[in-house]
Image 1 (tube, rainbow, N blue to C red):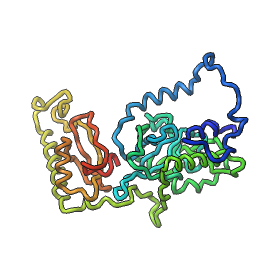
Image 2 (image 1 turned 90 degrees about the horizontal axis):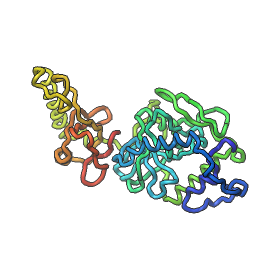
Image 3 (image 1 turned 90 degrees about the vertical axis):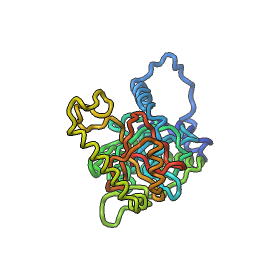
Image 4 (image 1 turned 45 degrees about the vertical axis):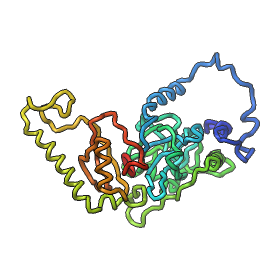
Length: 349
């Protein structure tokens, strides 16, 4: 218990109402005089947390997309959620609960590291065995963005974290091998009477019930291949396998041909200084690329109209996941979140 910080009393204080179990708030933990903070210097580790929060502030209003960590809007102090995939049939995101308390990590938790920067310190670990289904209205500010490799690590820990045979050691974070690299995670849970991570999880479950956040169906391993399937589970096939696919592919090919023409332009004919291309027709765009999945029920006309309205063009796709890469000349361009009025299913899948 001594290695687990913050105390259970501080964790329980994040709930809307006090937890049902009074054992979570022992008097000897919450009693005592208030110290005089005026004579106490700010510790270096707290200054580092302030710096991390400042660095991640630019992500706060990022459009919602897979791999992002968003605060739970109705109770930002309680926790956040790492978004894995959009389920268009239910109109909800599937993800995992995120808390700042990395010391409480168990064998199914993914600890946020320096390589995930910028990441707000309120995103300390992902509890991969606590999957959630959340609506867009449940999501608040963005705290960080995971790479595809890190998302795959979270999926792997959800399926295989319980296979860890190490001894229970509350408060210990260690490196474990995952497909394609490593991850930092905790040790398996021990006996409930001796392991403070059990009441910690009880607090989290009560908080989710108070917020009426639904638990998602646990992921199951495929019968043969060890690779973990990407989510959403509903296949995005209609939008990428319909009769207008040839037209979209032709448009993308035309764009690539037009770009290749720049290779044959004389050097003085190329537009320089970050206008469109650099280096006398090098063929490298200076715009911004965004990878997206379209809804399965989106028609070719809907997508074409939306692309024109948003001043976007398709430069590649569909890839093996059925995703298209869009190009905008506006480097500050932010796509609207999936929903009414656009054909998007997932941004940055």
